[in-house]
Image (tube, rainbow, N blue to C red; front, top):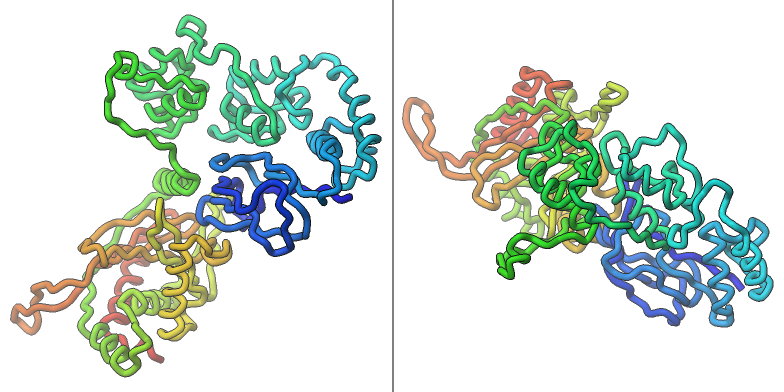
Amino acid sequence: MSIRPIEVPKWGLTMEEGTLSRWLIEAGQPFSKGDELCEIETSKIANALEASFDSVLRRILVQPGVTLPVGALLAVAAPADVDDAAIDAWLAARQGAAPASVPATDIADPATAMSELRVVASNPAPQGLPASSGVPAALCGQTPDSVSATSHALRLAQREGIDLSRVCGSGRDGRISVADIEQAVQAVGGQLALQNPSRPSAERGDDSTVAATPIARRLARSRGIDLRDCRATGSRGRVCRADVEALVARAGLYATADQSAGQDSGRVEQPMSTMRRTIAARLQSSKQEAPHYRVCMDLDLEAMLELKDTLNHAAPALKLSVNDLMIKATAHALMAVPQLNAQYDAQRQVVTGFADADIAVAVAIDGGLITPIIPAANRRSLTEISDMMRDLATRAQAGTLRPSEFQGGSFSISNLGMYGVSQFDAIINPPQVAILALGAAEQRAVVRDGGICARRQLTASLSSDHRVIDGAVAATFLRELRRLVETPALLMV
């Protein structure tokens, strides 16, 4: 009688957590291998989790809207003839309460399993550790001295008997906060009741040395919040107002001044999605760590637009766009100036170059953006690039891209021309070293042969990481890109 877990999958190397969107089947419903069980949203995509075996969904443990780390238990599957007591014993064994002699995935005798579980449950907690009814055994233990954590997190861990080495910290350099402990306990099926979360200001420790904005410090003082418990996301590593409000929200202390006065401020507060949080963290890190600089150049599109119209007229099913041609031209330019076709590992201080141009193209989707990749764009025909880009953009909007189709890439393009934007600066997508921002194709007055005439042009802005790319190299790339755009026949060879 096999009892098997349904867990948060790992879709791609960078996936660390997923948010359960909805269940597609109900508890008690049988399913077959390949059936879709639930939908999970990651930082980039929302995919359906498919069953890898035949069974019955016996127990749902997580409700929609909950975010859990990879590998966390979502539900339990077992044949219909498996007793509920056996499932209870299996869950206890998975959380570490059952002895090693009780199998974690296949319990043959429910009565035996429950009797062994009662023996374990009757044993006292390890000596020196306080008993805790809400902390699963998987997190119990003593915290090593080497663990980095806030003072309040250390006190909470000591009181509840939690080993902080088993908790992932979200603070700087992995520092663990009270919120991290709460999330870890909930992820393994426990519930932690904080004692007096709204401690008065008089009980706060000395957080005067914590770098914080003035408004964040005032708000923390008024709410009895210790700034050392806040995750610092503000400029120059300071705690900002949003950090304090996030901690207040997690502790369930939200009561604004307007609400306490019985007034409706008309504000609507909505937590950031997993995707939005990931975008915010990556781009903030990129701006803080990579010294950006920009090089801009106007590109004349007359010849390229003429080629596009000619090809689309000759083959109506082709439907080439300016974006398709710019991807092809960029790939060729990267082959001519390979320094930009690279990734930079800041920790190891190593630059990795690539033989082909795997170009990531920013696509706006609901709630954020994603960068599907055209692999080896330098070796693909215009037809291949056009078909692939259309397919990737469609599946990006539907949230059905595979991780391999949007993770990685050696260079990025962001095109806002379709919105009428003339020029803009883009933020580098780490670990890449440059990104090309393309504005709208528009009629401009230019000087040709001593006279003023109207020409269709666009402005290309190249953002580069000065740790790796010097200005002369960036200028050389744009010059090569302009040559290819203004002589598009070179793209056909």
